[in-house]
Image 1 (cartoon, rainbow, N blue to C red):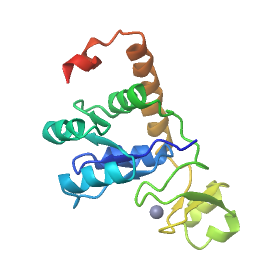
Image 2 (cartoon, rainbow, N blue to C red; image 1 turned 90 degrees about the vertical axis):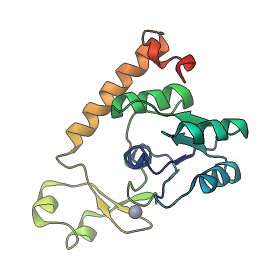
Image 3 (tube, helix red, strand yellow; image 1 turned 45 degrees about the vertical axis):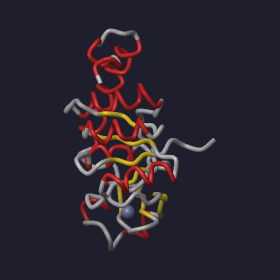
Length: 174
Ligand SMILES: [Zn+2]
């Protein structure tokens, strides 16, 4: 099964980073003009995620899949994307992509990163992942609590959406 793929407009870089962490192939480049986003979405069968109503409507008119993301809260945004596309709201670092460059991550031997992370990090952690494209090293650090908290809230909002409890998320509001 081919995983859902995305392309995100220039205003939503943080959404792109989240989708990559969740393991979804997501294109994002601040230099992409609207025509390029539409072109890549069509060519590579990607779902457009945008805050630009004009771009959203142009995508719809072309028969492309597009989500108009009008809310600001990240948990609500992720819940809405999950509601519309079925993405999972759990992070499995073995499936994650690099939030910086969209490269796939692979687990690396702890010894191999010894000289590439701060000594304190090395001492405190046993599991490390490396981006196969840019080489950045990842581990489950202190910021993880915040990530888990956002995802937990996103899953709660998603449940409300599924039961119809959040009326402003209805399609008619777009
Ligand atoms: Zn990378």
